[in-house]
Image (tube, rainbow, N blue to C red; front, side):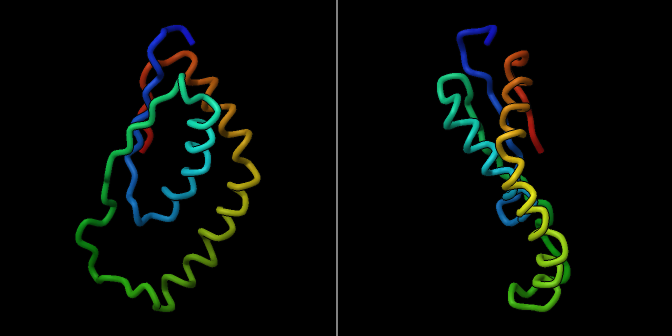
Length: 101
């Protein structure tokens, strides 16, 4: 890296959003492989601070959406984690701070 201080990644993420969660393996791997060169700063960002209506975690809607959208993306994400980690680190080499949201 160009500087001696670690590159800082600020991640704005909703802790209940399954799509935000799919990025966790990439960032965990980046941190594990480049611990001295990368600093990850987690920030809370609620996508729906006051959802209306409130969704039932056991209801049909959430299960249907999970199976139609999230589950397939999670499978693809796991397969692509190595490629995404390498790409992100290449970007970090030329930046001191990155914000992800």
